[in-house]
Image (cartoon, rainbow, N blue to C red; front, side, top):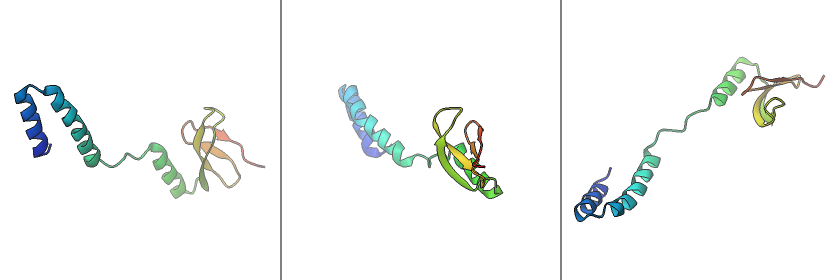
Length: 96
């Protein structure tokens, strides 16, 4: 917390304006947390994509409609056109 925020809180508490201090302090703390937060977490799908590409198990990585979940999900696409959903593991046949 910055010195200015501490001064504002102390002045507001001393004068009985706690709600005013909250109105000033909450946005300041939220802004500080945004700028000092850790880097965004990497999703498990990103790790899986990197692992599949490194192992040669996937020739391409793309989003398709998953037949099992009925949602657009990331899939590993193989050379024969078959796909494997990263989320549920459902295998879709390729173009024969």
